[in-house]
Length: 433
Image (cartoon, rainbow, N blue to C red; front, side, top):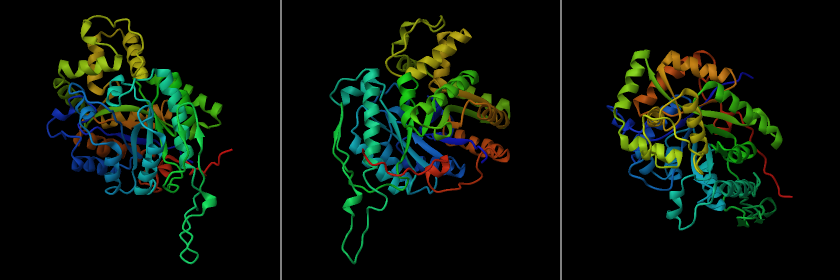
């Protein structure tokens, strides 16, 4: 079977560029369902595997506008499920500030509503500011991942409490549910005690797809054991290829094959019909960056107040923060490798919040993505448009056709569920014991 590229859309209503909403004609809201529906229709027209919506649980007016003002992800995706027909629908739910029963029930519900297109991005919630909104202390990095390991196992166990044929609905006998095909979970662990079963039957995909993005060693092991799709932070091809190989090498330890997990590095493509047009767009975007919004992102990613340092001086000696390990590690390594100043890093952070920026003609962008895909650095890409709608339509209308002509990307959907798009088998329910 021919290996094909997978494409996800990371959706921020005002674009991934911190000032993308200021671009002429750009969408300027992540609370306007009509704008979000227009983005989803474009993604489905481009035959993307899935839309992915990250989340945060606190508000900071100085941060990226779509971090601070956004619709609740599962509510939004449930609405999108009724206005799309094929594209996968992925949302973040926290393992630190959620509970397994509610998360399992919500994503099983989304899978039923969308007829098999739901995906859960299991995150540990890095930012300690969140704790104050839940009246608790923020666990340290190690404990967050210990909680996440148990949390994901409980959610998957709850999804497996129902057999596929448990709902009989026999009008003659009067039997609606076969009690021999529904079971409790009876989980009693270090962090959670959950009896089960869910009060919703087995979902169309058997289990919704699980997404993860942890870049630290515990995050990588959690992803290798439990994830179907992994998002990653990258800046350079060789570094990405090493990270890809190292992650795939972890999978056999958990009884899994390389093809069982799809790795999608994040990339912000700035696309033009010519190189000049693309770089003019990026220059326009960068002209909108203020010292306040970019510096706030920089401080957030590095876990320290960066306003104390000289922007034109060398990179300070910073320890990896308890949060955002992967962003900080990748950016600091690139900065030291290339002799960057803090201002250089600041500009990169403003452009794509620490993700890879790929600027050029449609041909250049397609060539680069093909090189990474065919040479062991990615199974596809999580596309992070700098702004909507034009910044995304440029990719769908100019780059996707090139990838399709080369046989690298699907010309049309070949199935109806997200598991179909990703080439994943529908899992049978696992019985405890």
